Amino acid sequence: MASRYLRTFLHASILASCALISLPLTANIDLDTTLDQESHIFTPAIPEFGIPSASRTTITTDTNNISRFAHDFSSAGQTTLSYTINSSTGGFYAHFEHAGSLTFAFRDGGTFGGIESFSPTTTITVADESGSPPQQLTFSSSIRGTNDTNASFAMVANMDFAAGSSYSFSSITFNITFPASYDGVLPTLPGSPTLEILGTINDAPQDLGQFVSINPIPEPASISLLAITTLTLLRRRK
Image (tube, rainbow, N blue to C red; front, side, top):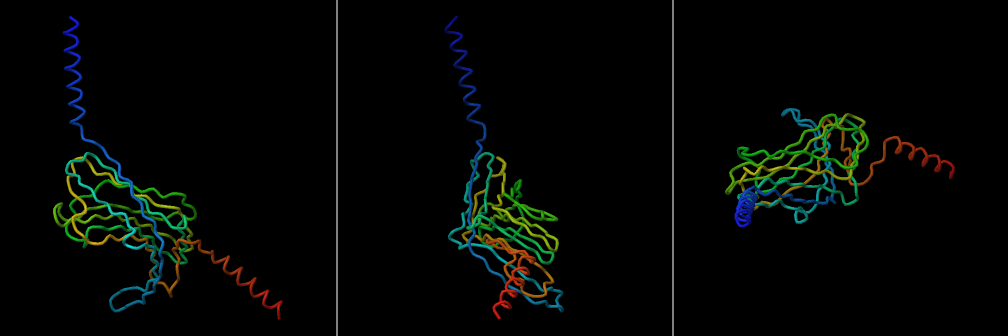
């Protein structure tokens, strides 16, 4: 009797082990990149082509510092990628004198083009945000091309802000879930990755400077107060 129970137990254990082995494995991949370079540019309007003037700021880093997302999904189960964008100073700061937008963009795998072949589920988390919230927020991740020699991976988020908005945060994280049914290999093209935060104000009257920065941006009222204080001190010295 004991022998029969033992055989039954072993048989059940083997079946349970096989069932566990056959289940698709789940994986979590955590990547991050720190941005430490910034610049700004002004482009005048081209009325004949309907192109407005624009003041733009960019925060980025050297290509060699960007963490690349390389993964073979052919034998993987459900996989979640968490990609965090940090600032070298511990924060990102924005002030929109006029209505504008913030765009977060990461692209890897060569020229970004072709037919979109897959869109994994995406959410984003903004850490320690304060100030005026964005009027509109959109985000996505996508793979374009085929899974053999032409696949390009991208994740993009866009925030729209009203005139007079000030906004700050410490980091932004893209959480991207690839189901077990996806069996591609990334990246498949050798092109250099790009990762940047872009601030744009269209119809800008002039270059508005670094209105999106890794350093705190003084409020216009603070700048005016500083100017008045400086002028008062100069008058007293005279």
